[in-house]
Amino acid sequence: MKFCKASQKQIGGDHYKDMKISVSEYVYANKIDWYAGNAIKYLSRYNKKNKDLNKQIEDLNKSVHYIQLLIEKISK
Image (tube, rainbow, N blue to C red; front, top):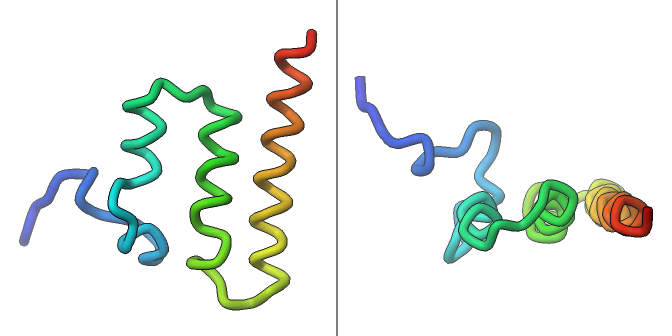
């Protein structure tokens, strides 16, 4: 059985594999909050995870939703 670091594997697809830096590493290294991190995640993968246009739009809408949540959070 071959063991590897958690940061060297992806569970469920390969839509992040061609990125120069993983989204999780980028978000963590830059101390980006949870809402912004999720928006970045969905923007980064929208056209890689699915070729179906409806699924791509769904990921873009998820990104927008997290941005709206962040705006709501910081506007209190």
